[in-house]
Amino acid sequence: MTLLETMEEAKMTILMTLNGKKVKINPPTDICLYESPVNPPNTGTSYTRGADLFAHRARSGTIYFYLYHWSMWQGEEGSYQLITEENAKKFLLEVAQESGYAKITEEEWKKILEVFPSLDEEDA
Image (cartoon, rainbow, N blue to C red):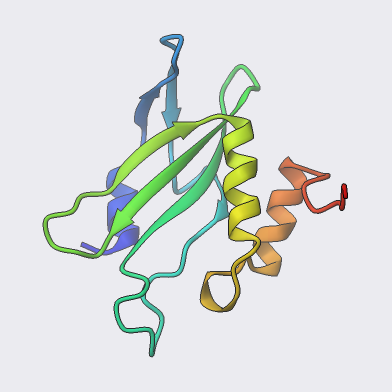
């Protein structure tokens, strides 16, 4: 099963917040803020697992963030994890330190800065 097929299958998945609210995610239509590389050429098995970050705007207008943990290994299923806004920022800042295939693309930065306008500002 390809990553796209997995995502299509996951349409309308329901995640639960810590206070019991249902969040109905839809990865094909939610905003993908970061998509980890999927085994690009000449990398061996370096990118056979990853985590993609999504933002979902609920009917209430609240934005929820979730990770899709995926694997290309047989027997390992993908899973979704609802995370806080603070953890989403930390995840992106960790990824921003990456280079090569794993770095954040220009297109992803545009989407990220729409959600977190000051994420790339220096605060030192």
